[in-house]
Each structure stands twice: as structure tokens, then as C-alpha cells.
Image 1 (cartoon, rainbow, N blue to C red):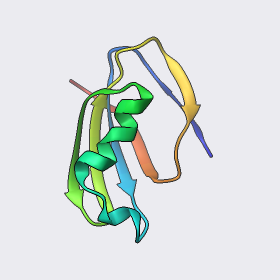
Image 2 (image 1 turned 180 degrees about the horizontal axis):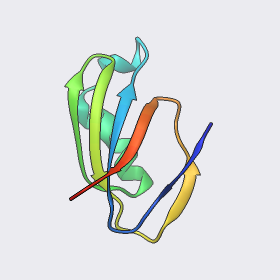
Image 3 (image 1 turned 30 degrees about the vertical axis):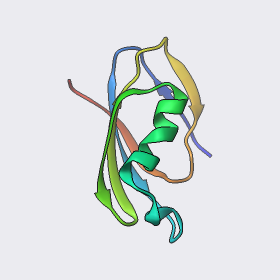
Image 4 (image 1 turned 90 degrees about the horizontal axis):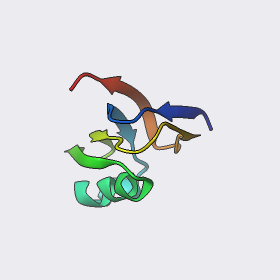
Length: 78
């Protein structure tokens, strides 16, 4: 896995690629792991295997491994 650093107060957009079982999950179910990781203002859109998520990191800067379902992640302007 690849590591990624999130910065306090910044917003992020992620492209999520789900496998054939995971794609049955609702957008709310896909959003929950982001909340569990500490993100707030989480929104997930899309359906099937391709989803887009946006969220804000309210905590101190942190670095963690990116889950395999995250195809790309980028900091975005507010």
C-alpha cells in the first residue's frame, strides 16, 4: 500500500474503485470508513464500482496507508 498525508483543515477528493461484492454497498456504507478514520463532512456519490468521495480532515496532520479501494486521492480547494 501507498502512504498519504492529510493536513489539518484541508478537503480531499477520492476516486473509489469497488470490487464486485463491495459495489453492492450504499453510498452511506462506503462513507462510514472515512468517518471512522476521522474525516468529517463526508459525501459519497456514484453507484456500482465507481464512486467519488469528498471529505475534510479536522485533526492534526497525519500519514496513513491508503486502502486498496482508493484509486486516487487529491487535496481540493474549499
